[in-house]
Length: 125
Image (cartoon, rainbow, N blue to C red; front, side):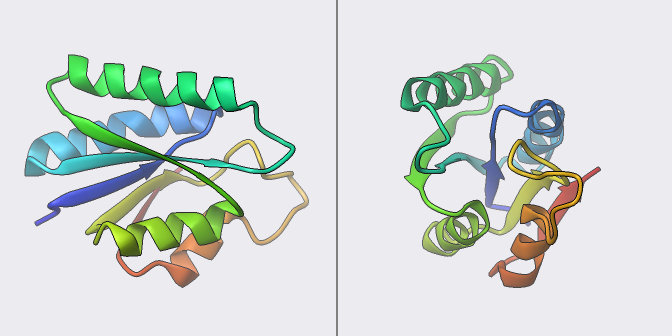
């Protein structure tokens, strides 16, 4: 059912917790897992992003799930949806909050992705 699962990740605790859901979904459906990190100009350290992606790849491979990693620059909600369209993702798995969301900010990245995504979005609270 889900041939390709897109998992956008950042350095937030929520993203780390959401990884378990992305992993479980990929294992259950024998899906191709694509891990995406969106670099926001002047906000992210490229070395830290590269390390984050490598840690994610290693964690998934240790669990028997191979994954591709993609690093892009831009506004997270738009980049996530663009990548989902490019890779023909069947589902996007993401948390409700990431590092870029302030408590009084609206709308969240997750809500924008839900509105713009070319596929279903599984939002993990």
